[in-house]
Image 1 (tube, helix red, strand yellow):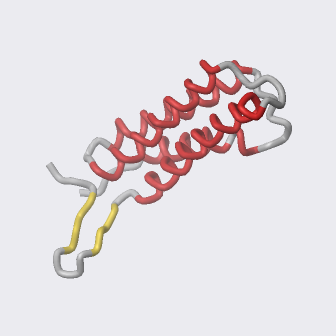
Image 2 (tube, rainbow, N blue to C red):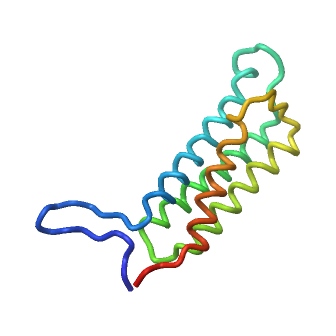
Length: 131
């Protein structure tokens, strides 16, 4: 079984085969966690009602699933599974935002984690692996 990470023992350089999927998945997952914190912030500061804790936990869990998918793309041969994890994560974040009634207010920031994760997931799940 061949790993997606190859190291060069002469130069000590780490070469990744799927850096785009990893970067998009990691950034999307981290933005999802930041988004969950932003939704929780108004209630923490006492400046109004925050969103239900269940929505915040759901966004956080789906973001962590996206980060796990990004790590699997880099560290293992299961790129299709990792791609589907990122796709499920993106759909979960988007569905939670729609169901919770978050008013986007013209801000692309709330849509960005889902967009990045779905792009990374589609590339990872459907890109042919060279042998």
